[in-house]
Length: 465
Image (cartoon, one colour):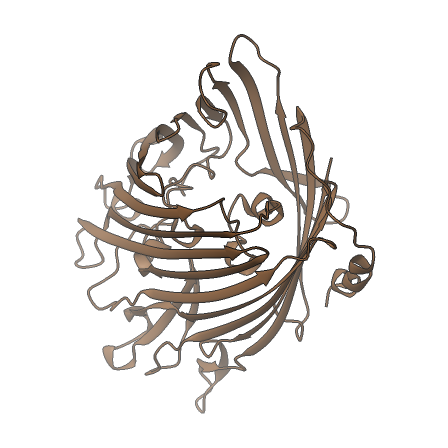
């Protein structure tokens, strides 16, 4: 178990009450550290550093200012090899706001020079998509965006691109267009519509046969948001949101608690189609594969008590959008029998203003996505694969079906004024889909079920300057 977990009681003993936030400074820096051990009974843990810098100029001319939002992950390859910086969606922006516009209104021109993972479609993180559209790129995936925000409506348009090495055509640049609009049809009700179209390059498998098979992606997301009272921040659910590029900012955003009642409900759905190489037949041909996702996010706050509910649905093809396909660039076969992931969670936390502490509890039940893979033998011995994340699979024993996994968490957040913060979660997971390989009576390695119970912990620290 990582030593950072053993120091947590000492950190809590040094607590202090949160301070009132000052005026927005022109320069802010954050250094975050994450340590996680998903199974304390086994060796090994994972650590990650994130450094971020937000800066803006004073007005360059009336209503116009320049901004920079830099975010990098720091990784160390090994002793004597130094450190490597990996971009996490850094951006440069020009923001224009005429004097007669409200504070939240603006026209923004933004450039993401290295990575555009913060430009995406959808709202709730488990069902967002389009963050990385060119998995076969040879370098960066930059983007240019234009975003207009008014009090009761807004719109954005963005262009992503990357250079891809094609088997037949060599290096070529491909593009994807994203666009969206929102309208407050009533003071408490907002509707959002987003869409994209892109050419992701030719299917490499078809190119091996001398056939150019362009892989196009197009899709749309629709969302309805109802809200009453001030906005309600997210709860501590570190394992669910760990892949979100805004993970560190989201986890340490200080909630503005106020007496009274507030609530919000968000319902969204996405439909995406991809042109991939067909899994059927010996001659390469195109096959259009659909991907679907939906989510319901409900939040309620009464004074310092917050309640959360999240339910989402994702097809295996949606989970694999960023790869895409399985095997890569290939649609599921007719025998795959894909089953969608369905998950629901309920949580609650309470904020103790005097100490800056927010402890909470969370429970989640998940029926994971799965599909059959004919590659394991004859149809009589097909095995089902459980899909957890893109290309993260578990092979079930022959004849077995997926089962629901239960997650229980105790969480805590500790705000040390404006200078630092601590977030932690302690989790129990019962996942009956966990397998390992063992030799059968004939000496052949086959998947067998293993102990379904695990205990894990995650701690995050952040210093702000």
